[in-house]
Image 1: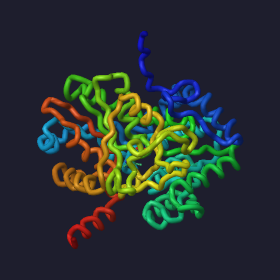
Image 2 (image 1 turned 60 degrees about the vertical axis):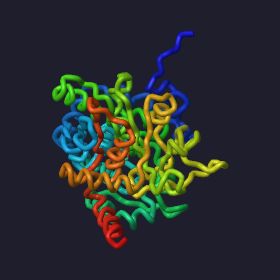
Image 3 (image 1 turned 90 degrees about the vertical axis):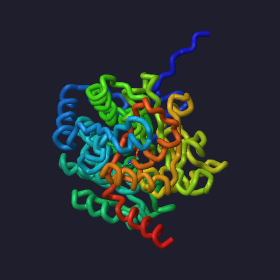
Image 4 (image 1 turned 135 degrees about the vertical axis):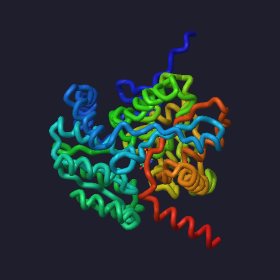
Length: 402
Ligand SMILES: *Cc1c(COP(=O)(O)O)cnc(C)c1O
């Protein structure tokens, strides 16, 4: 029997192997189907590409540098490069996707944007592009998250967005998502829903991945310029829903010599009952409109995830990643809150870069990888740490007080 090559791209129905698809309410079918039919043609068109690339360059500040972190390299005994998504406008990779989606929304005649947000990072990235384009923006956010993430709520309001509280259930991200979907059903004609990670019903995971794939496109050419080869031995990225990892992996998916590594949040420990190690603890199920790996009870109730890092605190993982893991193409390691905090301090002190707590998880897994002296590692530094300063200060105070 001839083994057919594994594909890392979705089929017609949006499946990556066993994962993906589009599980949506009847009333959204026409909307999602229209998006599916036109997203590739529009995003490949010359006018879209020109506007997208021009905004990435002059508004976001791309290309983001690929930085040879000499001190970390010495410590970990391999050549380590940091892909500096932390230097993007708004402080993380999320803006790459929201720019792509707002340009798409304009071209399909949508007049109104909705989004859901947990920590507020995706809400801010969405409010930013809506301000830029002069489009109405409504962001759903759990009531508890609105209290916890006051600075991001203030940013969204300054940018002209309306922040609507989700007051049902646990009053957090999944309730905000339910509210956003309810809104979408009621305004399907004129509204585009900007999903913030490589999740959701097909075509969202593929669409978001392609908008983020600028990350690996740049890594390839930057690495070639620096080392003479465009292929590293490893690409490492943290994973919440999976958009920065998907973008950092995309142009390496078919280069099987490049090992792909995902860093999940183990929270207080994988088996502590307070974790977000989704792929390790998860099983197949349906969440946010796609079939993937998620943390659930035996009767299919979603288990509330936990991580000190708000951006990794998600109960599912994008279907591309579920497929990469199950097919053996990607390897997953997990880092606890404490390990990630240790890495935050290490990158800060050794390289003079204060990373987002999410991004620090990617550094934490290097010591689990058995690196060799000759290995070249590209680590996606997905965002900067300004937003996490309170978390850092509280953590350090607790440490000092024992
Ligand atoms: C949101 C966020 C993440 C997690 O989201 P992905 O879709 O998994 O990339 C990681 N890092 C930062 C800085 C974030 O803001």
